[in-house]
Length: 159
Image 1 (cartoon, one colour):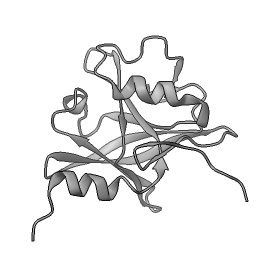
Image 2 (cartoon, one colour):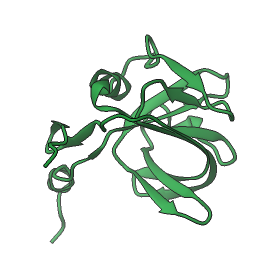
Image 3 (cartoon, helix red, strand yellow):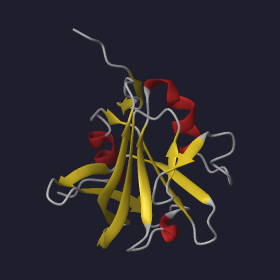
Image 4 (cartoon, helix red, strand yellow):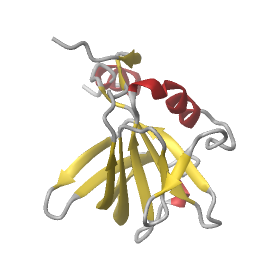
């Protein structure tokens, strides 16, 4: 029996995960970004990650093999940044402080972790493209993660 898209989305929505904003520069050099839910590590040797971007996403066509992108794992205080990058605002970077990684990708200031990658592969996966990135640079800060699951933002409760 096939699972409906709504049922599949509801089932996966029970998983609590870190909130991730993927950023990159478009062909004109303008910063672009989007909040994503499908991000994970792939390999230690070489260090690889993957991110899945919906074909309809406004930033989808800005990705290309050989280009660079950044993964920004947001800190607990950055819920408004998550919401802004998840919106359909034409300039999602409006008012967002950021610095450039060595390869030029935008790192969101205050993010718990930022990772710059060089895109090494683009694979089709249903209505998404799976972009594989080789990690070239990382930046960390001592912050609590912003989490999302069960349809809302979550916080860690220390035992």
